[in-house]
Length: 139
Picture (cartoon, one colour):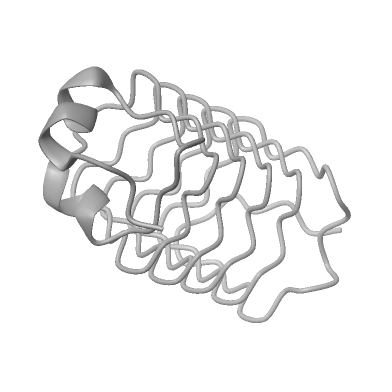
């Protein structure tokens, strides 16, 4: 299996290339194209995914604790039950991103409008300042 280490690595449609629970801890995946990738239960703790394209990626119950998702495109990505504790979400595109049951405790640089563009539910854990600004769940 190829371990991403360079800017711009292309993983478009990588549905079967990543086994469930693949470990990309601290991987450097800045600007990687992970469109439609399946990263079920992947460990992306402290991974650098700055400006990565994760459009429609399946990150069900993935661990993204402390990951840098600054500028990442997560449009229509599925992050149900994902752990984003302490992740950087500065300018990340969360349009129609499914955050049902995700843990966003301590995320950095998250704005209420990003959450409003995503799908959340009663199980989604938001930082207190965001939870208050966003109001009730959107699913």
